Image 1: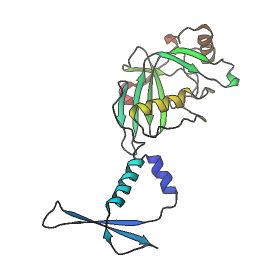
Image 2: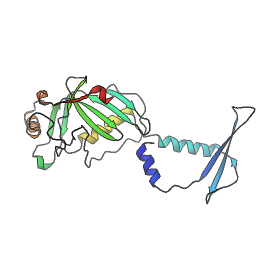
Image 3: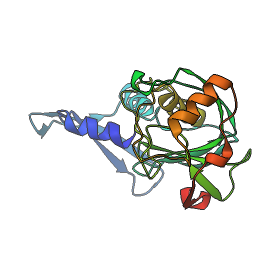
Image 4: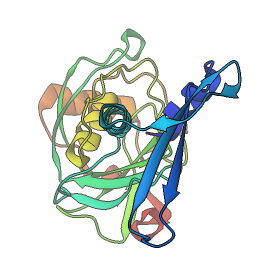
Length: 230
C-alpha cells in the first residue's frame, strides 16, 4: 500500500470490526492459538477460534493492498529502486531515442517526433524529475532536459495528464507509467526559464520540421551530478 493510499483510507470513515488475539503456549513456543472477537458499538464480544476462512480473507485483502508496491525483476536501465513505504524512489535512464511531442496551440509548434538526448527519470515521493545526459549511458555530468513543462530544479509539471496505473505494479510498470504520464501530456510552458542556450521553441520546431536530431551543443550543464540522484 502506498503512502497516498494510506492517506486516502485515513481520510475515509473507518470502524473497528474485529480484534485478533494471539496466544502462545508457554511450554511449546512454536504453538499458537488465534482467537477472534467481533466488535460492536466499541465493545469486544466473546472470543471464538479464528477460522481458516476468516484468516484467508484477511491475507487476500492484505495481498490486494500490496499489489501496487513495485516488485519483480529490475530492468537493466533502472539505476536505483527503493519501494519502502514513505521513501519511495526510482531512478532510470533511456538512451537517445525518437519521441513524439504534443504541444498546446499557443506554442505554434506542430506535433511530431524528435531524436532526443539520453534522459534520466527520477520519481521521488510521487514527483517526477528529468535530466539530460550525453552518450548512450549516463555518466557523472548532467544537463537540463530540453523540454517545456519543467521547473528550474528538474521537477515536471504533468498538468492534467491521466494514465491508468497497472493493477499489479512491477518495476517495469513504474517506468512505463511515468514515461506515459510525461510523454502523453502536452508541452505548454517554460516554467523554469529557457533550459537551453538557444530558443527552445525555435529549435524544437526546426527539429520536427527537418527531422534533424536535437543539437547536443544546445544543452545547458547543471551542478547536480548523477551521484546526487542516487
